Image (cartoon, rainbow, N blue to C red; front, side):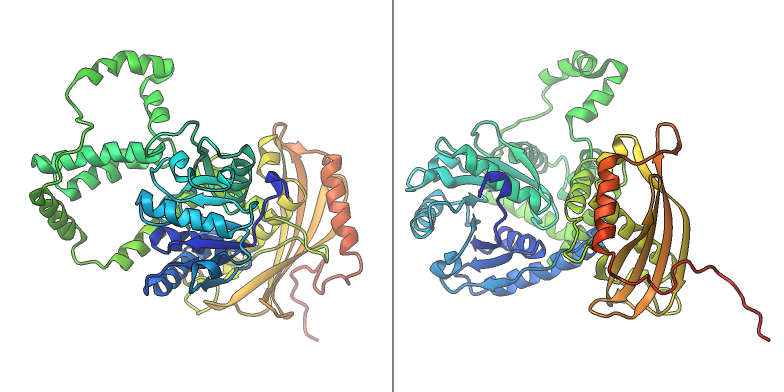
Length: 492
């Protein structure tokens, strides 16, 4: 199996804390089996609780595009966890001696071709791989909490890490919806944590000196720079501060401020007094709200931020672009010729005053099913960015049954007809596993040259993909209701 083809089905997790359990949730929600080993008696409860939170978050993050889940298994021993594993993610505490000892045992038990990744947030991979028999298969894959929602993962190899290992692990991480950041050279703390550590140390000084409380420091971020960081980071933001002249002007204007005593960049001594002050202020800031409730609030906010970023520009922006690429990568064609359509669960906020799914949500999910078909024929976001697209010019939607909150539903898509400029689609919504239509939607789409703002013949590759789908669906009867129009026949 080449690096570009690496797609493990059984993933071993060694260490089941917040990070290890978060990895397990991401693997399971991507259709991989996750086998987790942690000697803590709380590991099962923690892993199942985090998987439940992740499942709820993904239902909102990826409505209609949820993969078929894998299975979560809690192993009794390390040997059991590693048995049959295609990939290993180690997430033990940040104790180098502990990691090295366990990694050596993992290395001894695994076949030589199975990659081993460590979630370490700052230990150097060269030191962690030094005692391994097969050091070339070891790499750091450092995620961020919550692993099941934040896409960033830093990949850092040691002196003996092979290029093949980096490629294989990066390929796998991208396939499960992550944004890979390759660390060019080994450095303690890698990239993101060095930036976060500088902010953390400065914050501790401000608390130590009585300048601000934990709540005030968080407000300084979440009402200001934090909003910009979600999509632009620091350097692109400062480029805008330089105006039309860009970064050079910014550096010339604000560079002298680097000489001012605005930061310490060293940590204050963590005295018991400072510990008590930070802990007390943090307790006051939380105002008695339980950790699980704060995690739920965090997940809801992250989902909405990422989904909002997915609508910025033709391909999404920042984490939104990563989400769009992940969804597009899942748009495939089944063996029966049908594209993988919308599939998911009706969320509570889709229910109207009559107790069933509200009207505009039907059109939304049919529209998303159309998008999945367009991705499958090669007319996704890259296609749109290149100046071509399909516009819907006519829609006929029929409500035949009721979809209720919590109901698992799916949309099946048929291509009824096509020519060089037009595409005629028919969607059928059913309860998952059922055949009785709850609603249908018929659409006529026109291929458009977006630069000219007018219809245009579709490229040969797209036309060929449509023809292949039509041929695969050719044996099916024409759907009941296709071609219907709204009418009020007069009774005799």
